[in-house]
Length: 84
Image 1 (cartoon, rainbow, N blue to C red):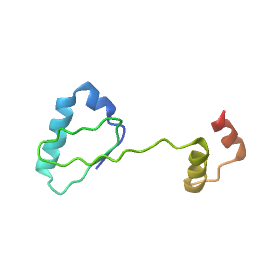
Image 2 (cartoon, rainbow, N blue to C red):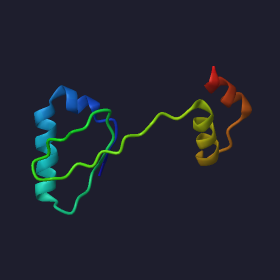
Image 3 (cartoon, helix red, strand yellow):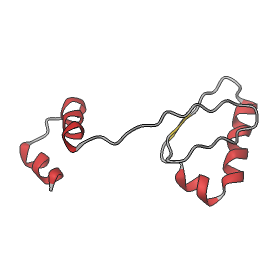
Image 4 (cartoon, helix red, strand yellow):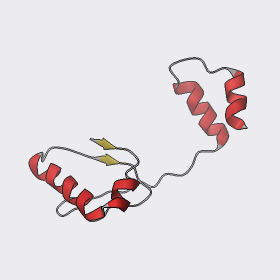
């Protein structure tokens, strides 16, 4: 299960969010989570958290990634707009 940008639930009601994750894991022991957040959770009762810190991409690397992975052709004008 992927939970992208989990800062809001972690900040709004941290204890409830942790309890929900623990409950899901208790009822579905084979599940694995990928949680993207700027903060580590580090409070799951019986589960190991393994943080992977990521660094920001440079503008050039971001454009290269967009061009190589986009499902359509990216026009030069779009690239110039992104850089502005």
